[in-house]
Amino acid sequence: MDRLTLLDRFLEENGIAFSAEVPMKKYTTFRIGGNCRRMVWPSSAEKIRRVMAFCRKGGIPLYLMGNGSNLLVADEGVDGAVLQLGGSFSSIVLEGDSGLLCEAGATLAQACVFARDQGLAGLEFAYGIPGSVGGAAYMNAGAYGGEMKDVILWCEAVDRGGNIRRFSGEELAFSYRHSVFTGRDDCITRVCFGLRPGNREEIGAAMDDYMNRRRTKQPLEFPSAGSAFKRPEGGYASALIDQCGLKGFACGGAKVSEKHAGFIINWKEATCGDVLALIDEVSRQVKEKTGFVLEPEVKMLP
Image (tube, rainbow, N blue to C red; front, side):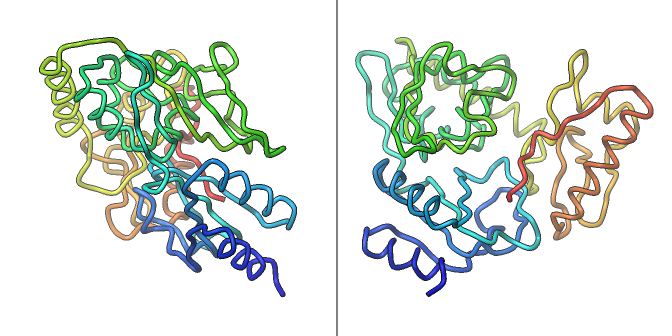
């Protein structure tokens, strides 16, 4: 019996939802990528722990994903299992007077709306960031002058040893698009936000303002993974790309957005290869013409 058949049996016995040969393009905002052999949807931290332990023991490659908003999946797909934290693991509850306790599969939009409805301020900047709460914590997502490090009190995660650990304060090691979890196999399960009492109408108005700015300035009408490059020290990726005359530059079906040069869009059935070729060419030209080195912000899977 092969490893994936054993995984199927394990998932069935433990009441964990899964599906075989899932087209990853349906689960990423880029709408790119081949099939993954198994996609798994756990509904509790304990089930996450069990899946991680089983795959580790059985030598089954296991990849973690949230809302798929910062992922570029290989055209060949994923030869292993993808554990997605989504709707079945997305509860949001109040924590004390001004805290928000979110399961990692909740979207940032859901967290922002919940906070607004409870009259809690501080998370408005995140409204419109298309990721999950867990993904946002993993990469210290930010926009409009705010970052996750400003509002996260602690995160819980299942580590490689199968332990559920809580990280808080300096342990989170937040920096620009980085956290203690970056590059590790830990799976974030819960995030606690520390917010402050505010006026519901004012919170809602700020959220609407941020969303309107996004719609005006960003190519939301096309599939993408958000900002394609990290902000280089001493510059801005979008300005540098624009300065090099690369707006509208394309490789196959992937193109630098003419609306916002920091975005690479899937404008015509792009492949992963198209996107990678475009990232390489944009990076090459920017370095050659400006001296700045651009680092991709999009994560590859696998």
